[in-house]
Image (tube, rainbow, N blue to C red; front, side):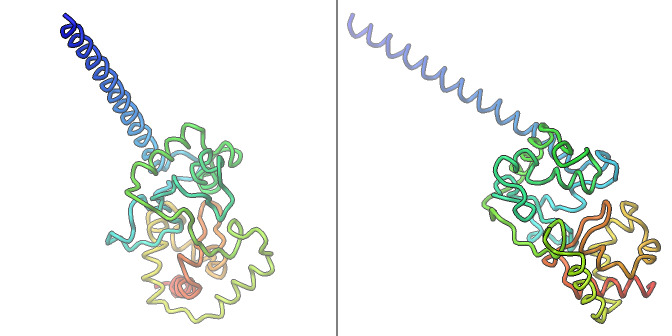
Amino acid sequence: MRFLITLVFAALLFTACTSEEEGRADDGARDLATQEQLAERGQQIFRDRTLGEYEIACLDCHADFDEALTNDDRIRPGHGILGAHQRVDTWNGEFSGDGLRRTAAGASKCAYMYQGRGSGIDDALTESEAAALMAFYEYISPGDHPPRLDWDVVTWPGDADLSDENFEKEMEGIDKLRGNPSRGEEMFDRTCAPCHDTGIGPAVRHVRRKVDRLPAIVRGGSDSMPFFSRDKLTDQNIADIQAFVRSGM
């Protein structure tokens, strides 16, 4: 009888443990499904060109894949988003801590400045949109990524202490370089054409009207156009692009 009681108790204990483990597995599956749905929503936000006043999407500036492992030779103004969910700061240190989560690693600043969303950084993305973008970053990130990005910016918003006078001196330095139109055409195709030849940005004929200001526009950004930091385009690259646009080739 004692043996039978022990056996029944063991069976009940086994059933309880199994049920608990199955419950945890079900909870885990539901959590995973929820995260996948959230990540899918984040992907939709990342690719949507209709969210703001300007028809530009996150993907127009940021790669959602490892650029070093693809044949894509496009040069985007923004850095790739792989690992963005685990960075310790973004926008050259402007966002960190809780601010990273609330702004989707600084994406709300992009949304405000370049998509024309909201009245400021705080309301350019809703909390649910920011959470979805962070879930998307995490979902597509395969492994370890640097917690900080090194970028070399010569003007606001990367360097708020740089005066207009010093910025103009930087641009004069580019103007003094001899640009190569042939190289500039190649660089234009990689950096400018994806927006300016597709209707996202003004056509080249309109860009040509502002060719003398081209270095300042490329380095500092203009309206919905993001800036290109020096780790994306060198001064010589910009001089070459300017020579190409000026030549009318």
